[in-house]
Image 1: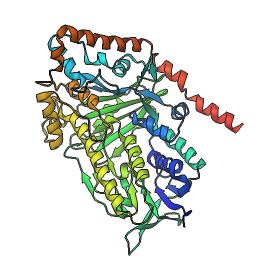
Image 2: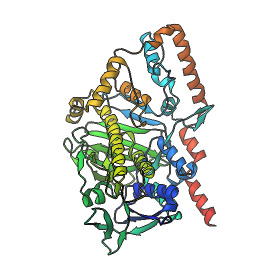
Image 3: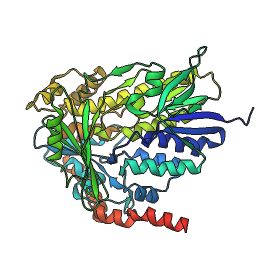
Image 4: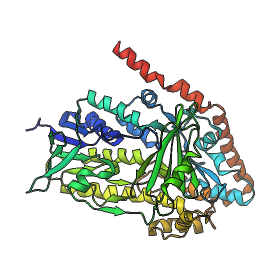
Length: 505
């Protein structure tokens, strides 16, 4: 029947489940019957969640009002990530979301900067990036003079899931309470036919989406898809998560603070900061990691830290039979570059583009799996870069990363830059040339040689052009307000509550 709707069952709520439910309902709702299964017995940690700029375009696709969303999630803005103590104790740099300088068809901007740098000219690399300098000075805006500012968000993840749930249910998504106790398979095809709950209820469907987190109840347990462990490259397997009470909007960047046994995140939302510490149980006890976190909070502790255990890696298939796993059910990469929500949104977008119109979906699954594998490996390599570039040898944890073997394609990328100064973006267009440049330079990897396009201009003319770029950044920066001031004007936390009160009046 042409008007028949495909019955879709989403297993699991939280950010992953409700992002998936709302996106499918918003863009494919007329042809889908969507049911989401979740249990109130499975709680979430109400800490901050950091994002990358791609969430803005995803929200535009779903017609989400930015001010309303940020107010509902106590959100703030993010211009990048500040890394402390990564290359060496006492070192600090920012990986910003902005463009650094101006590129040419022949070579990237950093070749001109390196040429000037060799002559004692050119200033700092950060002088050529508005987002970089604004982050350092605690300023933020969406536009400065005629320049668009590339921003991401810090949000309360629990509030985000609740916000999307409300929107999804308004579009007809049905929520069913229950803890999944069994996954029923068709003996002939191997497809999932229904999910049984511990309360005696069941949910039948034609297509299933696994958003059950690390448990991977459908794809891992039900369909037996194996997990590919990346612990030999990314050794961290545990985290403590909490939040602290802070004032205002905090800085317009996430902090990643390296400690002897791991690293601590600080994600500022309005009036509080999501905090946690990522570490490896090979090199550190749970008690030691917890004490390090508690002793280094940005403000007074807001609640007891919660221990999270995980494995870094991915399922060997993200899509098997009539089931796709999204988020942690498919794989996990530590939040060092704030990619968790990004990987959810790209998975959902990929699914919408490849959504099956019949039960003959093997070719679509193969394409989906190839793209998912490639994406996760590209992000994995960027994370490994941060660790492997360290010169720290003060603990076993850092010596492990400093001395370990890394993937061949990452080694090739680092060698090309070290010897020739050449950088190319990753294959999924998440980490651009600017990102690789800022991390490699920030952690002390300078090229031995570089493209000599800058030498053609001559030192005096080159410096004149570079100064004009620096002056433009400074003029734009002067127009930007402080981050807290901008958040209070643009998206105060009570804006959404007031809007709901007016709507219900």
